[in-house]
Amino acid sequence: MKKHLNGVKVPHHKGTSEKQIVWMDVPEKVTIPMSQQIGPPCEPLVAVGDEVKVGQKIGFADHPMSVPIHASVSGKVTAIEDFLTPMGAMTKAIIITADKLQEKDPAIAPPVVTDHASFVQAVRDSGLVGLGGASFPTFIKLNPKDLASVTTLVVNAAECEPFITADDRGMRELSDKLFVGIEAVRKYLELEQVIIGVEDNKPAAIAHLREKETDTLKVQSLRSRYPQGGEKVLIYETTGKVVGEGKLPADVGVIVMNVTSLITLGQYLLTGEPLTYRCVTVAGSAIANPQNVMVYLGTSYQDVIDFCGGFSQEPGAVFMGGPMMGICVYDLSFPVLKNNNAIVALSKKDVVEDKESPCINCGRCISACPFNLMPTNIDRALAAGDVEMLKELKVNLCMECGSCAFVCPAKRQLVVSNKLAKKKLMNAGKR
Ligand code: SF4
Ligand code: SF4
Image (cartoon, rainbow, N blue to C red; front, side, top):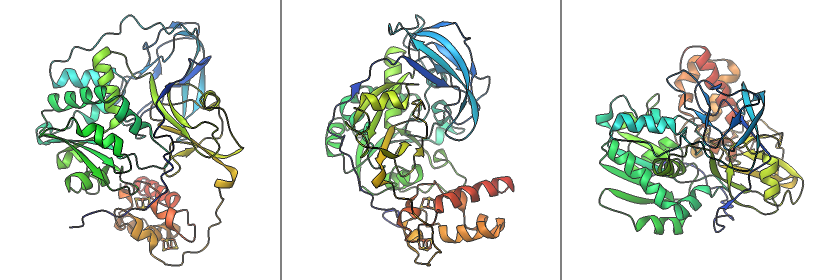
């Protein structure tokens, strides 16, 4: 059995790790899209002209996967518009013009949690989704089919993407809430152990959390190697368990939760305040004053970047998330979403448009892949339209981490091929 999975060494660029989280002012307006999770979009529960308070439920869908969306500022609903999500789907967005009073919804109160069912309902009511980027509804994760077989919570604190330090700061500044969240998951799911996996480029966070170690709660220092925070990679590195193709972590007795999700959960259990703000790392060579900022959800990128001193030079690309797995944002009116852990703006000189050339069969992409996939063969099978071969090559295991493309000397667009290949398999009913 391999000690470690493959992966790549990426530059860390964690220059904001020593900067304390700062709160941003309430913006003039927020744009709150009704689709911020995996699953169907919410329906607006308010109309233009309505007054809203902080934490008020403004969106929900009658669907088993739906989690509510809440107002992040108090003020008036001034528009409900069409909105194009980062994944290219159309949804509605509620525009709230802030009154800057930040009056809270009077219904806000700590949830009454007495057992697993009431805990799962509380997590759903909090509006929580995977805040590390996945945006999977947390309440579903905490309600696995075979609860009795789940024994371990793995806290994903790897934060392996370059530039991002929001989780790191959260562990050091908000650990009281983190441990409230962890303890609730441990208690109501009756888990045997908790492992917090942190890359070893965060020594201060590791030392701080280790002060709270017990026989059943361990902090595991992981080597800094991208993509250490990939769910299946993290499970292997912390527990030695393999989550196979088409399987879920719960199938091997594990639940994985992002560390900032657990901090937010702790905050909710203590106060009843749902998810209306989050910590965002604002960094990259084009940002004048990189830092970690607590941002009201729905605040525009332009407002957040202005708060960080604006651009120091013309950006070549602005990412929602990190440069490895993030999505390029082309319009700075784009709002901060629940799963948006970073805004990374790179200068023009740092954004090189690589020209693809033919594969030279060097095999580096295969060596880089944590799952030993063969991206070059997937690329060829896709070009040939060979669905059977794509299935055989297990492309559905691909987590789109980009390690293969990162090392490819021919600059092949391997992640794009993998995404298209997965789509092709899905359309062919072979998922
Ligand atoms: S094939 Fe997928 S999982 Fe493997 S390195 Fe490439 S993007 Fe990552
Ligand atoms: S790394 Fe690039 S050039 Fe090398 S085998 Fe893979 S696709 Fe081909």
